[in-house]
Amino acid sequence: MDRREFLRLLAMANVALGAAGCRTPKRGLAAGDLYQAPRFGQARLLHFTDCHAQLLPIYFREPSVNLGFGDFNGRPPHQVGQTLLDAAGIAAGGREAHALTHLDFSAAARKYGKVGGFAHLHTLIRQLREEYGAGNSLLLDGGDTWQGSGTAYWTGGQDMVQACNLLGVDVMTGHWEFTYQDAQVLENIAAFAGDFVAQNVRLTDEAIFEGAEAFDENTGHVFRPYTLREVAGHKIAILGQAFPYTPIANPARFIPDWTFGIRAAELQELVDQVREKERPAAVVLLSHNGMDVDLKLGQTVSGIDAILGGHTHDGVPRPVEVKNAAGRTVVTNAGSNGKFLGVLDLDLQGGRVRDYRYRLLPVFSNLLPADPEMEGLIQAVRSPYLERLQEPLATAGQLLFRRGNFNGSFDQVICDAQRVVGDAQIALSPGFRWGTTVLPGDTVTMERVLDQTCITYPETYVREMTGEQIKLILEDVADNLFNPDPFYQQGGDMVRVGGMNYVLDPVAGAGQRVSDMTLDDGSPVEASKNYRVAGWATVGSIAPGPPIWDVVADYLRDIRTVQLERLNTPLLKGVESNPGLAKET
Image 1: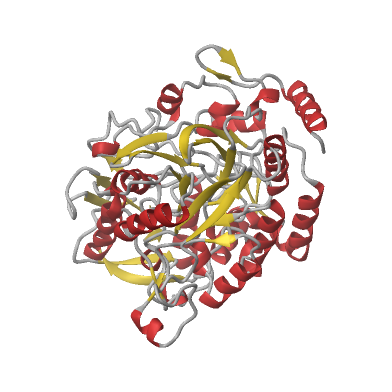
Image 2: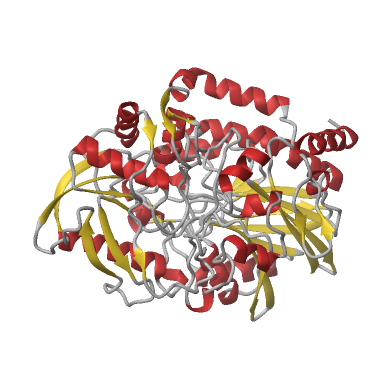
């Protein structure tokens, strides 16, 4: 498809779908203009992250709660809803506003359609690369690509490796990629046509002694720490930063020979070494730290021109510049689920980055023609599993979503299912940020359940816990989420609860944030009393129960229509004026 045909199809889509939203203050942004990225500079970096194996277009609701505190209070990404739009200069009610916020989500989703889908993303990527010229761009994948769907689970992530090879990914890093067995990870990387980079993943001392496989036996780097690419006649160094807390947030037993960490000092050494040895015009960190960590890292480590970040799923329309000893570093985050594509154009003069332009493009599948070759690959990947994926389980009587610091409605469904099927008083569910959205009236299929639950350690449990133990779990996760030092934040959101309510003060000290725990009937949760608790996704050991998707599917088949009686979200203290909390929540 040539450029003229591409623009003709966009114009047709604009006529069919109506006028799009506006970018304030002065000019409207029609659908046909949405994907126009005028050339600037010499090198174009295209960046997506956290697609979580979503090959088809989906709905995905952005959070109404994304709290930030201290230096991060009201700073991107801790702006939601109208506050985010005001800060970015985007008018409410249009396509961009819908892509970036939760506002009037169901109606806007019906109006503007689904987002993402690799066949549609491929069309956009190809267009942006072609208009910039051969050899003048790179496609970067921030990780969390091989996990999040039924087909990814059943193929060990190989479906996504194939799709990324066809997409033309040049460089990637990882996180959920490591939740497959280490042998599977290495097999997938060997099949990946680009470079997998991660400067912060090293062999353990014991693994070095035993001669475990590594990219560099002398340094202990398991993977290539960086790659050097020539773009438009200029050298660009892409350094990798995998999720630093992988063996804590996910089972270490899958990757026993590998250690992780932020490793800021080692990163500074690497940047200095690359600058001196390779003399690149630009140094870019492809990161899966989470945006708050990247903002601090950009201040701590000097010599990085841009950090293209992921992990926290934040769609940040305007890049953030942070100062450090060498000048400035541009920090971005490109959302999740294939919903956005970041476009960073670099003006390279005199062996350095003189200037840049950045755009975060929402991927509306009904504005972008599906690439036939990618569409064929997706159909082939899905074909063996189609009957199971499309099994209808229930009807959504309300919007079902996951994304936000606390319980989403689909999280509540998972908790309710565990309580009913496991005959439990309380349910716990991890604060994962991945998981697609189901609109009211739509069918909840097995595929939508797998979107919420598909991990390599899905086993469930029902066990006795004291009230004190339950409080310790909540306090531990709250300290991880709301720790004032980003380097101690391990990503994700607050553990979801079912059958229980509590008060949360995010700005209180460690161990003092959670209070007034009560069951749904109003009775207090007593520290010394035992309660029957259901849960899943245990990190330290393998639980004895069936996979969580079977538990949820059985529950949905029984109730037939999802209409929640309550949402067990905590009562918050001290956050009434926080820009990361929408007024209507």
